[in-house]
Image (cartoon, rainbow, N blue to C red; front, side, top):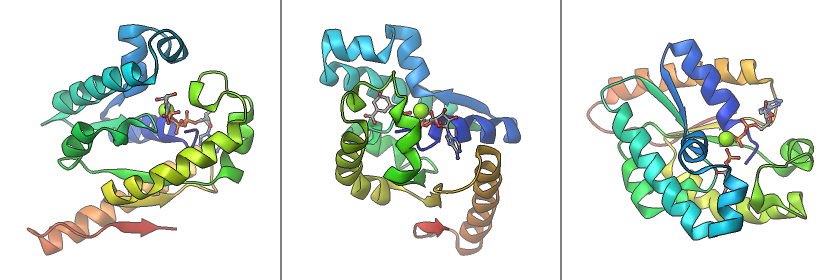
Length: 178
Ligand SMILES: Nc1ncnc2c1ncn2[C@@H]1O[C@H](COP(=O)(O)OP(=O)(O)O)[C@@H](O)[C@H]1O
Ligand SMILES: O=C(O)C1=C[C@@H](OP(=O)(O)O)[C@@H](O)[C@H](O)C1
Ligand SMILES: [Mg+2]
């Protein structure tokens, strides 16, 4: 949460003239504000809605050029993990110090209510292995502006594509960009 998935994803899509889909926006468009879904129906209901939104976004992107930004907890769903195995997955690697100021003024992320930084750290520690396992590319987003990070991501994606084309048909191992 708050690492820049939505902001960087949107800029990358603009740069590539690709469709941009933020699955949180899909959820909000279909079911209303995320905080209200958590409050009235609970997190399990949110996760089901979210998994359907992710599946819809991936299905509609097949054969098209699309950048899909997920919510930070979406990858915990096993169905989503399977669908992501057909996608180029980028993990934006960040830390608590970098997001601290952003989440201090958080008002839309129910899982960060109360001790925002403590909650972020606990969630991150539990999810990090999943992020690492699913990622084709890891981008360090601890420093740089959104436009700078988008350029670094674009360059890294081009390098990744060139490397995987060179070793096809074997998929390349996860690449880490500092
Ligand atoms: N590298 C960055 N530098 C400064 N602000 C950033 C950076 N990345 C994201 N932000 C800002 O932090 C907030 C959270 O970013 P967002 O893209 O919504 O994160 P996520 O989708 O991962 O939760 C937004 O206000 C965004 O503009
Ligand atoms: O990490 C999470 O569990 C969540 C992250 C949020 O999206 P961002 O990661 O885009 O903030 C949003 O899906 C929801 O508040 C739950
Ligand atoms: Mg987001």
